[in-house]
Image (tube, rainbow, N blue to C red; front, side):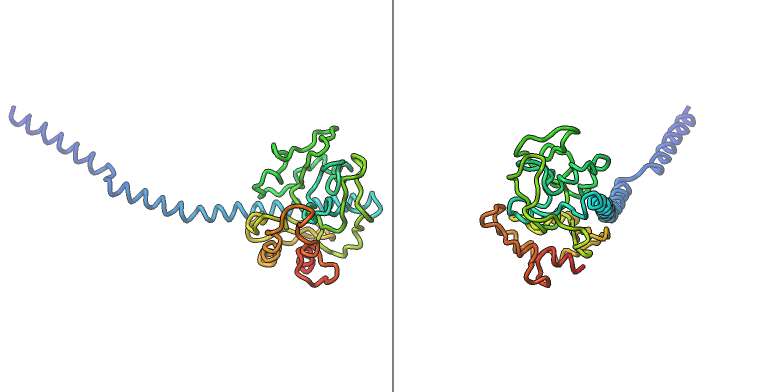
Amino acid sequence: MRHEATRSVRKCQNARRRRDSSAFTIVELLIVIGIIAVLIAILLPALHRARQQAGQIACMSNLRQLGIIYSLYANDNGGQIPLGYSNGRPWTGYILHDTGGFPIAGRIYKAGLLKQSPRAFYCPSQRDARWQFNTPTNVWPAEGTTPPVGNQIRVGYTSRPSVQWSGAASPGDLKPIGPYTKLFNLKSQAILADIIGIPKNSPDYTNVHHRSLNVLYSDISVHSIERGVYDPIQKLIEPYPPTTSGGPPYSLYIDATNPAANALWNVFDRN
């Protein structure tokens, strides 16, 4: 009996040793957790950069598509394209619908050129819902309907402020004050860019891609502009109120008297 009891005790001890030798100790578990944490810390920035790069590439693809759309509009309208800004505010080239109808980008919409690809007018990296596609604060107009008067709808890119548009014309038939911009007169100048030059906004806020801006040129080429040439101008624009009266001067966007000046679109034209 004594020998049987001894054998039984030894069996239990051996089984316990086998369990202990095959199980993780607390120290080993902490080491594994630490390794996983280090790997995550290494991979997350790389994933974030990859996501940013993918967004920038998709944005550039959108702009190329818009370049084709603007060329089609020009072919159907005697070479004219609807660039400009609304009611004396040179940063508002992103308007699709405003008081009185469809100015600027709204003419592309009214021409039926956005039916198949309305999202092309929106940068996928944009975080502000006011410049995103069909959000509660920026509702895309339903097919065959006209938005209520005063309902402002924005696209995700700003057009060159080459001519002012007015909201005083009859609904649905808004025209610029002065002649339309002719595409062939632009001679490879910038025509569309990521959201830029908005008063009361910092360079970080208006720079969608953080390190650069994407710009479409009249020859349908797209280039990234380093934010180093953009930030100083946005800092000059930032203190101004977002109103026509007392807002930033037009010369901060385009200096017509001195094409070499560091106004926003002049800088884009040189790249």
